[in-house]
Image (cartoon, rainbow, N blue to C red; front, top):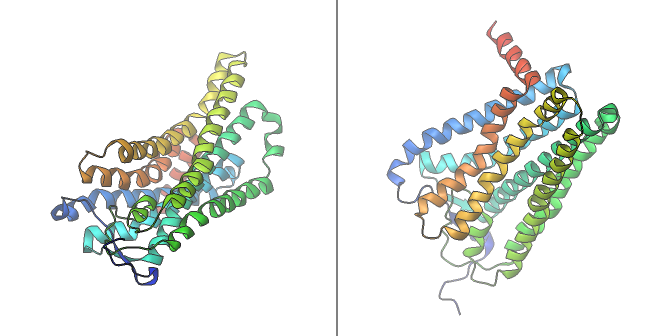
Length: 314
């Protein structure tokens, strides 16, 4: 029998955590995080605006990039209020339902990002292996269907994981160890058996992010095979060059995600602030880096962005 007093979920208030042990430096720590948020929001908004307003970018590759930018905006906004609220105002309290909502959207946009990266890998495979039928395979309606399927997949996969947290009883210990609601964190505060929740959560991530990573890898095996079959070295270089931005974006998404998993599993002796800083930055690195990657590596995006910025200066 637990010594903690069980309370109903409707009355639960969780306490989020900033950077443990460095509370006196929260104002200073907020500066780089604020800059990252500004970069992520402005960069992705600019990419999205460029794709919408520039007719030359109304192509399958850039439609998928617009989905990626939308996802990155959602991922940034999902944690912005709680993270900066803690750093600036020490606003640590969050209600149970608000916590579940934030958790859902953080996971939802993470799964969406993985799915969009998979769709972009398929786009590159079709463009390289079957360039003559590229436009007929990836029509506007088909791209829209892929976008809807990605959103439905994330919703159906993650809703049970989040909803099952409502069946748990929670004790009087209500301190979470991150500056946003993180699924394993919330489960640890339960007084009841969480094995079903753990299994559902693990299944959800393996069936989405895990499966996507394998399919992306398979796509690039096929892409490399196709590129190597091209006779001209110049054409091989050009074909593979169209994939560089996507490869970097995949690395930027999966490396921090894998690093966070390893730290949580094997870095139990590491200081608490290490866990928190990695958890905070892993959600911000892809939204910050993706606009930079595509602006630097993709000539058409770079030209469109420069055109928009130069027109605003007039």
